[in-house]
Amino acid sequence: MNRTTLKIDGMSCGHCVTSVKKALEGLDGVTVESVVVGRATVEYDPAVASPDRILEAVSSAGYPTAPAS
Image (cartoon, rainbow, N blue to C red; front, side, top):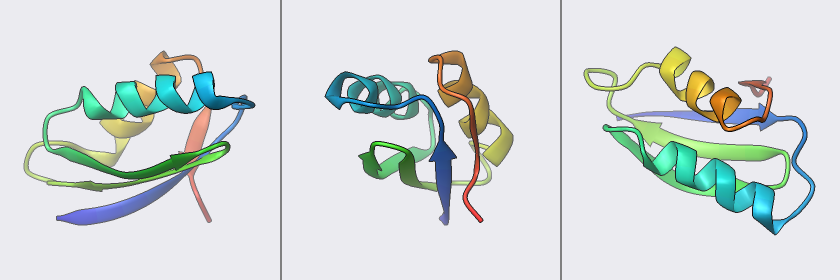
């Protein structure tokens, strides 16, 4: 398993946290470690889920995202 942390823009409340968490939990091979306003950390199986797919899922939920630096 690999781990990545995402910087997520546009989050401001608990509803945002729930939306991002649901988007990430819907991905096969991804385990959500934490989601807080502005950031999420996940573990993922690279044989099943790619970092690009993880970013795409969060962006599709309405929150621009990028890997945290």
